Amino acid sequence: MKILFLDQSGKPGGAELCLIDIAKPYRDRSLVGLFADGDFRKLLQQHDIPVEILANQPIQVRKQSNFLQSLASVGQIAPLLAKVVQTAKKYDVIYANTQKALVIGALASFLARRPLVYHLHDILSSEHFSQTNLRIAVTLANYFASLVIANSQASQTAFVQAGGQEKLTEIVYNGFDSQNYQTSEFEVKKIREQLGLEGKFVVGHFSRLAPWKGQHILIAALSECPPEVTVILVGDALFGEQDYVQQLHEQVAKLGLENRVKFLGFRADVPQLMAACNLVAHTSTAPEPFGRVIVEAMLCGKPVVAAKAGGAIELVEHGVNGFLVTPGESQELAQVINTCVAETEMTASIANRGKAIASVRFDIVAINQQIAKLLNQLSDDYKPTNSRDSKSVS
Ligand code: UDP
Ligand code: GLC
Image (cartoon, rainbow, N blue to C red):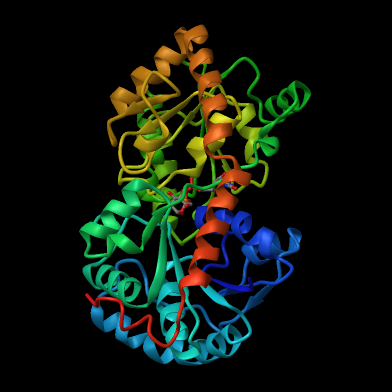
C-alpha cells in the first residue's frame, strides 16, 4: 500500500516522533508531506523516509483560533491543497497526522478520491482547542475519514464527546523499540559527570517547555525536597512559548534554586539522559493525550510519576508500575519525590515492573502490525463511489 502521510509541523513533537515509527515500514512506497520545514524533516531523512515540504509558507491557524482567523487562512491553504491533491493521486491512502493535515487531507481525499485516515494525537476538548477548531476537526473527520486512530482511550472518548462518530475510531497506542532505551553504566556515569550530577538525586522532566506541560509545578515541588534533589528540564519551547520560559527562569531565581535546576534545551539523547535520572516526572496540567515520555521512562527502567489525567491513567497504575499525582498539585508531587528518595528498594521494584510491562504492551512490532491490519481492512472496504453515501454526516 502506498501512503501519503501529512503532518503540519516541521518540528519533532510527540506526534511527529510517532509518525516516524508508523511511516518506516512503508518507506519504500510512501511519502511524508510536511506543511513546514525544520528538524523533523531531517529526522525523517535520517530514517530514510521520503519527505517533501508541500507548503511554501506555514499555515497560521493556532489551536485557539476563532472562526474569522480560520477563514482568513483559506487564502493560504489553496495552493497547498492543490499540491496535496496532485500528490495524493500517486498514492492509495491519505494519512493525516495532525489537525491542519486533517483539514487539507479531508478536502484532498474528496478531490483525489482517496480514503482518509486521521491519526488523532489530541484530546479534542476546550482545555486544548477553541470551539471552532474542535467543530472543524470533528466534522471533517466524521464526513471524510474512513478511520480515526486515537492514541489513547482518553483521546477517543473526547472525540466522541465532541460529536465524533465512535464507529470510525480504533485505539492504537504509540509503539516503541525497547532496544533504543538501553544505556550502559559507563554512559550514565559519563553523562552525570558532564552535567555535574554526581551524588545528586536527579528528577528529569522531558517535554517541550509549554505552560500545560507544567514544568512550573515540578520547580515548585523541588523547593520542598531535600538539597540533593536536582531537576533537569529537557526540551525547548517548540511553539514560541518564550514568555513561559522567562517565567520558569524567574521562578527558579525567586526560589533560590539556580544550582538545582538545569535547563538542557532540546536533546536527541533522551534515553541516555533518562538513564541518568533517579525519577522521571510528568506534570501536565491539562489531560495528556498519550504521553510518550511516560512509556520511555519505563523502558529506561526508571520510576515515573505522572499527572493523573488523560492517557497517563491508561499507562500508569499507581504503586504498581509508577506513581500518579493530582495535576497541578506541587505538594503531592513533592511527597512522591521524597518517598522515592527515601524508599529506593520499593521504587526500584516498581520501575522494574514498569519496564517489563511497557516492553510488551507498547512493543513497536505489535503496534505496527495493529496499524497494518487496520490499513489493509481499509483498502478492502473503501469504495470511492459510494462510501460517502453510506456515512452519516454530523
Ligand atoms: N523529546 C525529545 N527531546 C527533548 C524533549 C522531548 O526528543 O528534548 C521527545 C520525548 O522523548 C518524547 C517526545 O519528545 O518522545 C514528546 O512526546 P510526548 O508524547 O511526551 O509529548 P508531546 O510533546 O508530543 O505533547
Ligand atoms: C501528541 C500528544 C502526546 C502524545 C503524542 C503521540 O503530541 O500531545 O500526549 O504522546 O501526540 O501520540
